[in-house]
Length: 286
Length: 327
Image 1 (cartoon, rainbow over the protein chains, first blue to last red):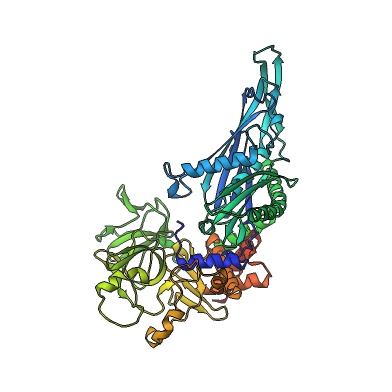
Image 2: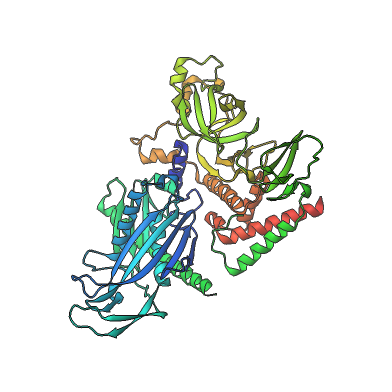
């Protein structure tokens, strides 16, 4: 329900201009982030992230597949997001289709890099079992349970947490095969390899309202935005992907400024997220 | 209470648990015989005739409750009133609502009830303050008074044949601007004598609507329209539309001053924490929570964090147990 009266809109814009938002946060402060891992036991990895009113769940399933002939030494990852009607009535039926596609594409761009697989945030060559013949296919699914703004950041954090929770079963090659035949595989049920997530980037969305940028906008603040930039940055401070939303045009210098602000914010976010994820895994082990 | 969605450390969880247990152990004033849970038998005198109302059913000759709540008896009607029911308007309630639709000679408002409330054009004071008959031109200018999505404070006049009617005849009622609207379950606001509070030391209006909508905003002087000089009027009115041709500096001058905004955010966060914990929201409790935040030297946004949440719960437990020992 994002219908706001004129007075409320002015209040929100004034707050952002004066660096004191409606809930008292500064422009570059995130809401408290709550991470739970292992929420879906049947999946290889899963996580649930709550940022204020926004609640998302991400799950990772791994299946054996063939690598694409163009990239025989890389595994495959597919990301798909679904917006549940429990978030808002607007999402019922086909209402959420546009938003789901937009989020899926943005996440693919931010985490998987270009079409050739180059520059991917997730290391695809670690998914290979037998080069050219057998690889792991990762299916990453995101579900938006409750929406209060900043869905992309929450989904990015959930995917990062789910990947660090993912265990890929160990594969023994039972019989070698020559040529086009598939080798026989022995997939272990007991031993799991933890997926390496130190290179997985985190997504920071900067929403521009008036002359200022804010991080982690609520849905009220998002209704006031002119444009938004989502940058995915990894631990080394390198940009893995960039998406711009919103119809208002931006000057290139503004975009560069927003990118540098996002880099600055991402350092704290990565640290915070890593500590929350390790705390969540510790709780899960108990 | 719904699950708290906050990252609580182990010690914080223990403290919160202890505070909540202390609160639950305090004896309540209400007659505990009156509260029932599902499938409890309701003590009724079967010889007198009685009517089974909401929340009851007849099961093998006995009157049994179908919901958890308190048994109420009105003459011969016996019913169970749930604690977390939807807002039920009574005559004279002060409520805060949002305009959904502008209809002929009336506005429809959403007030968190099962129906939309109706505010008739004849039930408000016209901007020029003159008491006169509403003409066709007034009807055409309705959007100039209240538009869609405006937030309005009004009073419940009663149930008429076509729905719930409101009135906004006093200067205190009317459009609310320059502030924020909070929404939470209506059972957290108890009916009091005063719902409209002016907090002088902060310069803030706090309106606790009985329907669970609370308005926290800058104080607006309820000026008597008839005394305002006609020539001054265009200057004093806030512009109806965001004038994009106006420079950003001009817009900035119209923003709420930082000091007031800081207080508005503190009060709003205090109310958010109280509603998250499920405590009754009254002015005294809100002020106490705000003072607690200030005394702890907390940043405003930290008031929504886990540490403050636990502190508020502990403080409330202390306060209620002190009240018990005193009274």
